[in-house]
Amino acid sequence: MITCLTFFWVTSTIVNPMPGEINFNDFRQFKISEIEDQIKLIQEDPLDAVEYFNLGLAYMGMGRHRQEINSYLEAIRLDSSYANAHFNLAMAYDLLKDGKVAISHARKAEFLYGKKRKHRQVRKVRRYLNILDEKYGAYRNNYPH
Image 1 (spheres, rainbow, N blue to C red):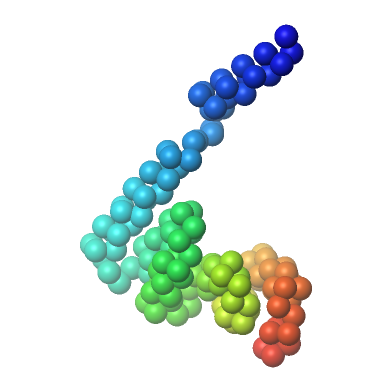
Image 2 (cartoon, rainbow, N blue to C red):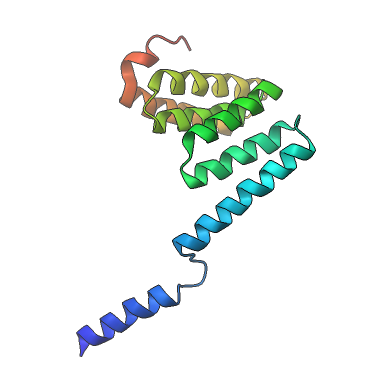
């Protein structure tokens, strides 16, 4: 009897997800729609760095890290002081196992956040740099603080 109840619970959870949950196909469709919306917003104002950053976030949600990187790079081309874009670039390059470039962008984010006196973000980047140092230690030593 317990096995039947467990089986029923598992089946009903799959058919009727818990509140706040979303199945993969719905999530995928949502992200595709989000990407399309961001592309339209960029077409309306191609000089808006924030829209390119948001497009990068949408690509990140789909695991399209090369397109994510291109979007963040465009955001930085439009606004070279965009610390959030540098930080997200660091994470994207880390996912692609490019430690040297990841550390470079993390350092740039650290500098830009510090310049804007955003101390919480500076601490976040430093924690991430410590993680990068554990993964790619030899690279970090080549970059001055």
